[in-house]
Every structure is written in structure tokens, then in C-alpha cells.
Length: 240
Image (cartoon, rainbow, N blue to C red; front, side, top):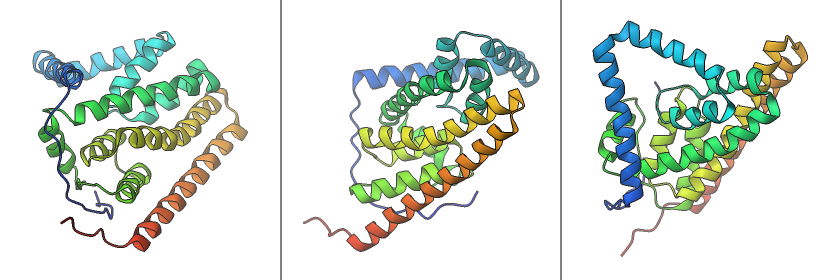
């Protein structure tokens, strides 16, 4: 995987973590351990078959269950587009989008809390093992540029984007607002695409593809403006 052109900046990362963040981290660790134990007990093939049955059940589940699982699953290597594409035919476009907004907010808050916990070294190793360098960012323009680069660069899984951005020290509010805003563009396109493909509406498919293309170009334009703004600001003066 090619590494995007990312800014680098050194800053101090606090090692203190709040009790709620520790609890969230322990919960995630328990899920990971349980998953590894399941693979060790059943074997990879049977585990994948079980995952297929669980996914089939999830598609028949009530909306709170489906989207609740989605909020947690997006912290792992699960493609967000799978949920978007599936939600449209099951729950409809409007209902799906209304559910996805709080799902992305909750997911972002969880990722941000866990990224500042004792799991940070393991998460950094996981992200950097996928070819993504994690800078330490202090200046707002650097944070915005890195956040925009990660969110619109194709080929980087959503969960890797999230962990990389959080580990770079991005402010929580900024991380949530930008992440949800950018991701809703893709969510809208894929939800409409899934619904249109299921109902055989060629016009809807064309609209969804065009919407995704325009959204991608708009995101690239914003990224370019942020890069130009950072270049105009020049290097940050060293602290005394």
C-alpha cells in the first residue's frame, strides 16, 4: 500500500487515561480475546461459516441491533460499505441514513477513547504495520490536513483511518465532526446504491455513482485548500 503524503509534527502525548476509557479498552480487549479463542476452538473455516450465519441473522434483526453491531464492528477490519450497501434494501434510504449518523458518532467517540488508553502501543503497531505512518500533530492546520488526507485517500480501510487519526493526537470534537461529515457522503451514496440495485432502479444506481464521484472530487478540493493554507502558514516556530 502506498503511503500518502502526510505532515509530521512532534508533540507530547499524555499517558494518563480516564476510568471510562480504560473500561472501553478492556471491553474491546475482551472481544478480541473471545474472537481469537473462537478461532482456536472451532478452526478458521467453521468460524467463517459461523460469521456468515451471524451476518444472515443480523440482516433480519431489528434496526437497533443491526446498527448497534455496526457501531462496534467499524472499530475492526469490517468494511463500512458492507453495512451501507446492506442497510438500504432492508431499512430504506431515509431510515438508514438517520441511523448511520449516531452510529458514526458513537463509533468515533469509542475509537477516540480507546486510542488514548493503554492499548495505544498495540494500536500504533497495527496501523504502522499496514504502511501508514502516524505523525504527532499539534497545530490545527496540520491536524485538519492529516484528517482530510486519511479520510479521502482510497485504499486505506476505514478502521485504519480512524485509529491512525486518533493516534496522531487529533482533537476529539474535530475528529468526530469531520469524520462523520465525510463518511456521510460515502454512506449516502452506498445506501442509495444498495437500495437502487435491490429494486432494479437504473436511474438510482447512476445517481448514486455520480453522487459518490462528485463527493470524492469535493473532498479532494477541500484537501487541496487545506494543504495550500498550511503551506502559506509556513513552518511552525520552535518553542522556547
